[in-house]
Amino acid sequence: MAMTTRVSVLREIRTRIHLSQAECAAALGVAVETFRTWDAGRRPAPAAVVRSAQTLEAKRPPHEGVPLQILADELHVHVRTLRAAARDGRLAATFGPRAYFGKLTATTTREAGAQFMTMWYRRAYGRGRRRLVPVCRVTIPPNYASTLVGLRHRLGLSQQQLATKVGAASKAVVYQWESGKRKPSPVFWLRVERLNTQLTTSGPGRQM
Image 1 (tube, one colour):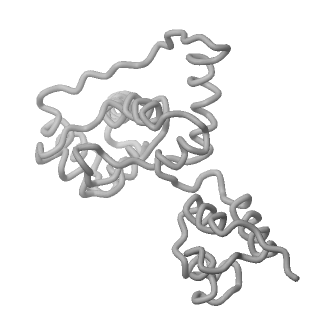
Image 2 (spheres, helix red, strand yellow):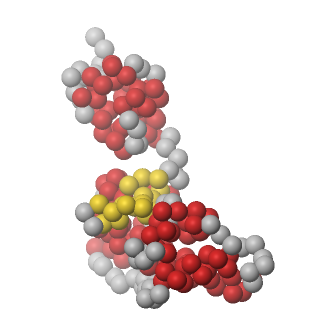
Image 3 (tube, helix red, strand yellow):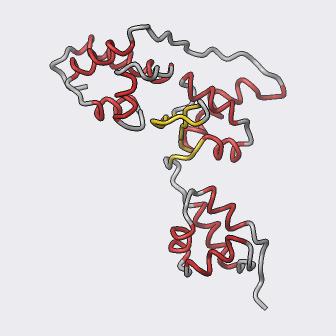
C-alpha cells in the first residue's frame, strides 16, 4: 500500500509558493483533476508527490516577490513589523498601485527579508529585550506632485521609467503621485531624493 501523508500539506506548499492548482499540477507532472482532489482534501496525496512539492518549494529563488503576510509567517514575525519596515525603508519592498481596506499592498523578497532580520530585527528585538534602532525619517513636502513632475522631466524619463528607478509597481503609481491622488510613502520619497541628488551632482546630461 502506498504511503500517504496529511491532506492539507499540498495546499500549504502551493500557497507559500504562489501557484495556482493548474501551475502546481504542471510543475509536479500530474493531471490537474487529480491534483485538485489532493488539494481539496478529498483524497490523500502520495508521499512521493509531497516530496516533489517540498523540493519545488526549496528551489524557490530568493529574489522572488512574496506578499508581506506570507513572509511574516515564514519568518515568525508579525506582519505589522514588516509593513512598518517597508514604509520607512528598512525592508526593500514594492508597493502595488491599489490599496485594500485603506492599506497599500506590498511585496518583498525572501532575500530582502533575510537582510532585514539580520540588520534590523535582531538588533532591535534580540536577546529578549527591545532596543531602539535609528531609522531614517523622511519629510514629504506639500508640493510633492509638482516636484516629481519637474524631476522626471529633467531626467527625461517616462512615468514607467521613473517607476522602475524608484521600485514602484507600475507607471500608474507614478501617475497617482504626480496627480496628487496619492502621497508617496517615505521609502519612495527617499529614493526620489536620491535621484534628485544624483541629478544635481552629475548634471542632466549624464546617464545615472
